[in-house]
Image (cartoon, rainbow, N blue to C red; front, side):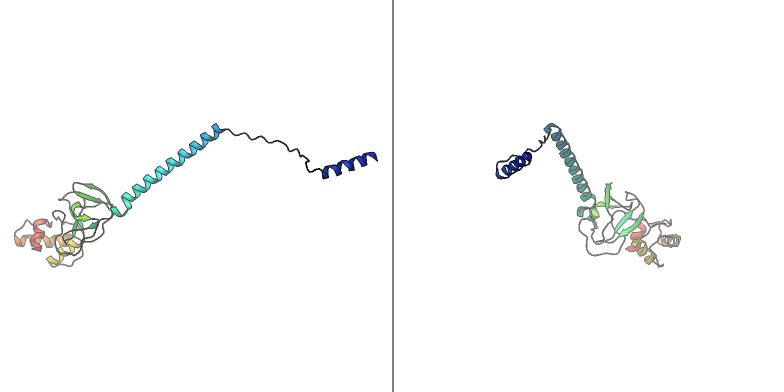
Length: 203
């Protein structure tokens, strides 16, 4: 009975005393500045390196795919001859009209721009803005050599001048027509439409 009364008195005293202290377990936080500073420095260095790589990739992308790498035929109005390799004596395989957008330029060699389709055009006749107007004729960008396998607008024009159906493909029929024309005007009848034959036909 005495124990019960004593317990009740202690409990009443505790509730009435606002300065009662509670004892909480201590928690010790261990923080190693040396260890965490090293991790933070490695993280910062990694992010910086990644940012540099991404920036360089963006610059490279702009170099090859950006607006500055878009080129157009910009001539005096004539079409631009397209060649199979970087030489004025290379066969003409195609012809791009003045003002036409070119495939991506991937390099330069011997005064020719190498296109992404594997062909070459004279670099002096391309620009960042398209030329205007078109003139029919043999085209610019070196001497014209059309032979079996050549294609394009110049071949069609040549066939029209020879009086045969303009298919745009230099086949054996076209070669035979060229030989006949060459013989008729006193040129070497080899069936190849070189600069002399083309100038003769279009003059």
